[in-house]
Length: 148
Image (cartoon, rainbow, N blue to C red; front, side, top):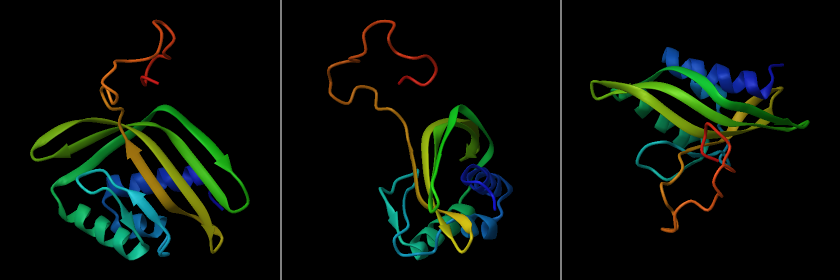
């Protein structure tokens, strides 16, 4: 059986390859699956809605061309749950433009029928100044690279 990390990296590669069947197979189809997608929506709950979201993504003029870990991956695995976290740089395109999108990513996977499937995916970016008080890290204390 693949590891949770291999399952996540295979799913990302399927997005790059525009292999919708492989992407859908990487996600749980159960009603408790819950993702926080990039884009204008806050959440997507349930395997049927996740499938609809991925179908719409593949019909849109956007995509990921490559990815690399900027920090991590950090892994946790038990008998039934796995977690993959880290900072990922995605090379992306959309609306005739290309660029790099750095995201803090978390995937929670559950063992379903002797394989790992994503039941939760969350990507985010730091807010510039969420409290309106500046950065509270003392000078020099902030680790390099990801801002945290």
